[in-house]
Length: 117
Image (cartoon, rainbow, N blue to C red):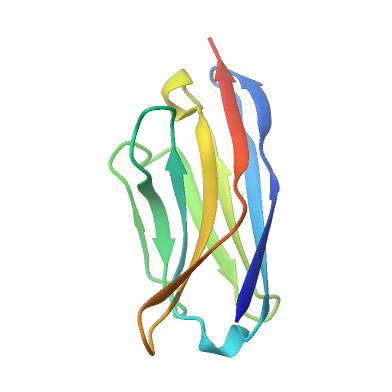
């Protein structure tokens, strides 16, 4: 089992910046890629950014150039730096960890990000 605990988030004005962090505990050696997803009210959960254990990243088109994902394997953390925030970035952000062995996904409890116009 893997537990994910997120921190960060909050309220920011348009154009501002926020950072999210997620720490994994438990069977962390079983984790492959980690990432951040978000879900806005009335919408489906969507991928924001993902990073493999080797550091390869991909970001959703909507956040490219504004958000940056990073990872520290020694500390079992994944972070998301969010710059130039827009009201449409408002959502609950979830940390995710994949277990390649069987495809199981682990999720954090979610953290609210609100961008005011």
